[in-house]
Image (cartoon, rainbow, N blue to C red; front, side, top):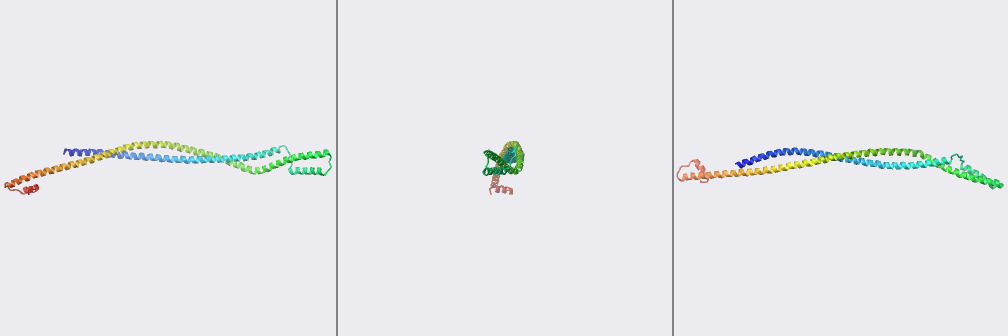
Length: 288
């Protein structure tokens, strides 16, 4: 009897301990889930910032590539402008302090002098003067044609000049705009990457706390399983003990009944009168 009471007391004691441990484990589990949720939120924010940082890096790189393209166009345009200005300066220099006669007029003069040399009888001195005049006129003709070629080139150049100036302004404006865009995207990229680093540290700390808490929670559930197993074992022992006690009582009862039955049977043999109760005992004892 004392063993059964001792086992039952132990079961009650362990069950109370188990109940308290289960309550604490449930509370710890909620804290663990809260830590996991916070960690996952930080990781999601980190991933979002990394994504935005990469997007701004791509936009910055594209802006830089476009800047290079428009700088090249601006440089090409500047070279074209320089070529035109050089051409105009050549004309200005060629006509500086000079009265340029048209090439057609000079050719006409040369033709007249040559005709005169061919058709008229001239003195040697007069002929020499006309030949020298032709030489000078041919120099003027060469200079006039050079001027006319430059003027022709300049006429075409002036048509492009305004358009090139306009392009130059547009390319320069575009370079400045793209440079501002590149700076803007670069600053955003740096902000997102730097902020993501801070979030990653927070997420890592939360994950560290999560693992520590999980280990503590797992230890609680290991203890709970251990106590549950212990209670189950004690309950089995208690049932076995109760059965053994019951069997022992039945055995003792049968022994007592058998003794009573034998005593009554002896009375019957001695000629004593038996009561109905005696008969019941004899029947139960298996002596009838």
